[in-house]
Each structure stands twice: as structure tokens, then as C-alpha cells.
Amino acid sequence: MIEQNYTNKNILLTGAASGIGFSQLTTYLDAGAVVYALDYQEIPLKHPRLHTFQTDLSEHDVLLALVKKLTTAVNFDILLNTAGILDNYQPSMDTSLSDWQLVLNTNLTPMFILSNAVLPAMLARGYGHIINMASIAGFSAGGGGAAYTASKHAIIGYTKQLAYDYTALGLHTNAIAPGAIKTPMNAADFAGTGDMAKKVASQTPAKRWATAQEVADLTLYLTSPQADYISGTVLPIDGGWTIGH
Image (cartoon, rainbow, N blue to C red; front, side, top):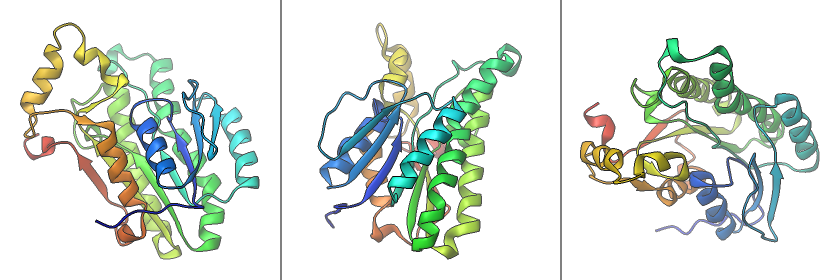
């Protein structure tokens, strides 16, 4: 196995307070990176190479101001667009306009804002990585409600277009599509006797949920030089879920 070394690499990460984002945070710090981490919750970690910012990504004017300040001071090597929210599996007629807008304003639009913020320096340097967090709900229906499924399909399309437009200029853009990952976001599935979690595991060929660390390890590989020829790809990490769905 090739040991990944991210010393002196600057990472911009969203959704860093818990779940997959927190595992990415600690994994890149352990690999030597400097991490600038955003979340609407307080990030429960102190580290000499960690800079944290508590902000609501759906407040786009605030996010634009923050990222302008950051990109003026820092050239980012890697952008990890990990933050996202669920929609309680609500079908379209049960989804209010405000709920629809909140999901897209949180899951999708910040990826556009942050990507456009880091792209000029990456393209000027001729090298950079962007990893967008999609979902198996980006491939098919049933992994979320109307708003969540729409947002994840859109993330996959945006990722592919970024790669189409900028791979020749040195940008490496990919998406990760997690299946059943045990995180605080999915805590409801494990509530009580955990019947929903057991059902999901039984329907997954791997017969288990993944850990957030497994997703972080995949992310680390995708942003390494060893993965430079992977571009515009959506990689499922789902225990084989998409084989039969």
C-alpha cells in the first residue's frame, strides 16, 4: 500500500462536524494536511493545522463572503464538498417550497459557490481536486424524498460537467456515492430495536452498514496522485447495493 502524504496541502471541507465529514477531517490531518473546515455545528476538535468556521451553508451571501476571504489568503489544493441534509423521505406533494429550497440550498448550491471560489487558483496552478458527496440516491429513486433525490442527481450531473470542462486544465473532479453509512444523520434507522437498520443491512449484499472512515479512506485515495487518471467518475461505496437496485 502506498502511504498517502498530504504535508503542506490545503484542504477546504464542508460538513466537518460529524459523520463522513468528521472522518475526512481527522484522516487528512493524520496525513499531514492543513484543513479549513466548515459546518453549521461547532466542530469538536482542536488541532494546530485545523481552522474551523461555524456557518450555515444555506446562507449563500455569508458563504460567499467567507470563501472570498479564505481564497484570498489560501490556495486550496483540495475541495471536499461533503455537507448535506436529509428530507425525511417526503414525496413531492408533501414537500413545501421552503423545504425543497432548503435541501437544494444546502446540498447543491454551496458546491457551486465553493467550486467556483477555488477553481481560479487550481486552474492557474494546473492541478487540483474536487470531491463532491453524492449518494446512491443520485442513481435511482427511493434513497430519499423528492428534494434529496433531486439534489443528489444534480450533484452527479454537476460533477460530470466540471470534469468535462476542466480536466484538460488539470482539475480532477469526482463524486462519491455512499450507500448505508452509519453516521449521526442516519441515527433514526438505529433507534429502538434498530429494525430499519437491520432491514437495510439485509438488503445490502455486504450485509452490513459501512463506517464513515471507509468513505474517508476512499476520499483520501481519490485526491492522491495515484488517482489522477480518474476524472468525472461517480464511485459507489455501498456494499453492492446498486447491483440489485
